[in-house]
Amino acid sequence: QVQLVESGGGLVQPGGSLRLSCAASGSIFSINIMGWYRQPPGKERELVAQIARSGITTYADSVKGRFTISRDNAKNMVFLQMNSLKPEDTAVYYCSAVSFRLLTYWGQGTQVTVSS
Image 1: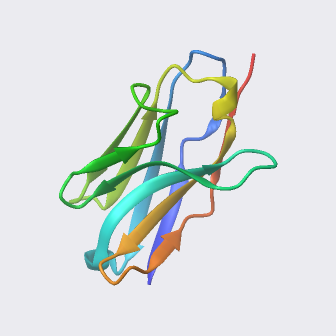
Image 2: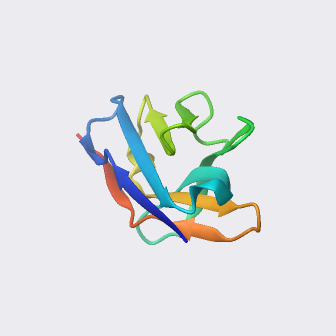
């Protein structure tokens, strides 16, 4: 089992920045990919960015050039630096972890609201 705890959400004005953090605990040795998903109001959950243990990253087209995902394997943490935020980035952001056996784990989510 893997437990994930997110932090860093909040209210920010358009054009502002936020940094999300996610701490993993439990069977951390089994984790391959860590990432961030989001679920805007009334919409389905979507991939934002993910990073493999090797360091290979993937981003949704809508966040390329604005968001950066990083990972600290020694501290079992993953981060999402979000710059140039837009109102359409408003969503609940979820941390995810995928094990080498393709089991997926989720955090409880953190709200990000972009509004003036």
